[in-house]
Length: 170
Image 1: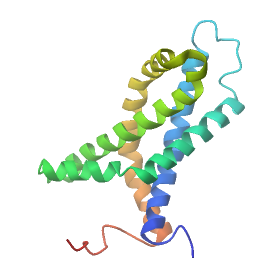
Image 2 (image 1 turned 180 degrees about the horizontal axis):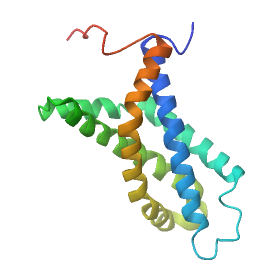
Image 3 (image 1 turned 180 degrees about the vertical axis):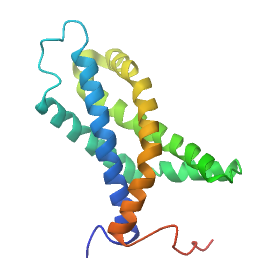
Image 4 (image 1 turned 135 degrees about the vertical axis):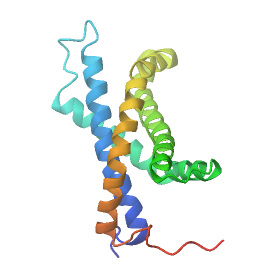
């Protein structure tokens, strides 16, 4: 049985593609920001190893969140509740909910993992809030662009296209 085939494979592929892209961006921006804090310029922060550690941590968190929290479905339900019929408007709203859940979760959990032992809760929150606005904004834009591409790739790889699937019975 191929874990990348069928409806489950479709979800895994979309989640994987989106997490690769998002976690790379999150990692680079956070490491760049921390590297440029006065006093950190000479420290080995934004390095290939630093990137690898940051990427793996954020990818693991992102995969878990993406597999267990149906953020895109929540966004789609919100568009239904708001009676949004326009596909572009629905995409903007559903992706906002997806970005809000994923970027907030990944960025905060990774900040907590990397800071809570040395800076405590207050320092962890301060570090997170320093990078969060940019991460949320850029994550939203990247997800707006990448999600349709990831869905097309997932349909091709998994052999499952939810747009062509029969509607579930109530």
